[in-house]
Length: 127
Image (cartoon, rainbow, N blue to C red):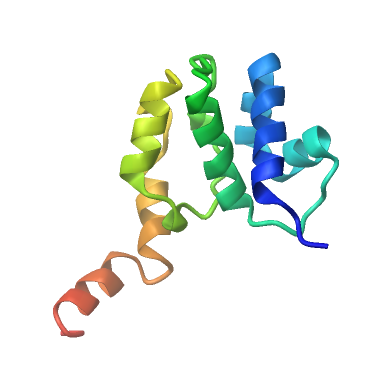
């Protein structure tokens, strides 16, 4: 049976709206927090679930101003699959301070394992 990502996101958003401290757990240990909240361990795209949950929380006007994004587990969330513009829009709606986010680590993950050299090589024909 396939996991309904929308249903999981709704459950996570509802739990976080009721207990905002759960948002910090989702930032620090996303998979463990998702399992604790939903009872589901794996079998879903954690990055997509993270995005859907944030979107749901923004829709209900949740205030996540107490969340410390400096502790975001970048090994669990594939930021290369996320739109920086969308994340900044959601952060603003959720009152999240993005100043503590390690932008260098995010940029590195978005550029992939080849890093800046690979990006420049791709742009300039590998020269």
